Amino acid sequence: MTDHQDTDWTAVIPAWVNGMLAPVGKLAAHQQGLRHKAVSVFVMSGTQTLIQRRALGKYHTPGLWANSCCTHPHWGEKPLDCAIRRLDQELGIKGIVPRYRDQIEYRADVGSGLIEHEVVDLFVAKADRDLAITPDPSEVMAYEWVELSDLKQRVLDTPDLYTPWLRIYLAKYSDRIFAV
Image 1 (cartoon, rainbow, N blue to C red):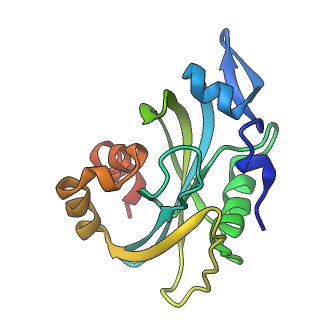
Image 2 (image 1 turned 180 degrees about the vertical axis):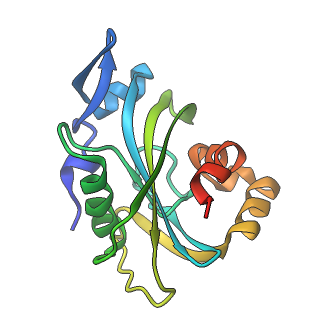
């Protein structure tokens, strides 16, 4: 189930080099802090959102809680196609189509000398709580449905348990992500 294109540190992602979008190795983009494309998905059931705890084998932010799904598109891949692909690969979620919500940019230190400087296409997918979820253990070690208001409080109370991007999304972009 694991897609080596996404888990291999030598995978190629779209990043800006000297102002031009170019295919760059994923690890190199993070080591150099290059601005690069990304996709994030929030799966929602009413006011609850699905969060995942990143597998311990992930090369950055292992064991931290994140939004439902986040990744880098393959070179030339459309953001929506990427979102659908990674929902399946990370969580085994099939049959839902996320809707584009917005694009944001952030820069964050993710540890081990790595920087995420992402231009993120944000998607929201509506689903029922009984949605079939079969996570790939090399990607996801746990998942949970949580009330959005409770998640925001948890992140404030224990920020070190959550990825930098989730903390940024909730602090700065909630209104853009979760607008009705």
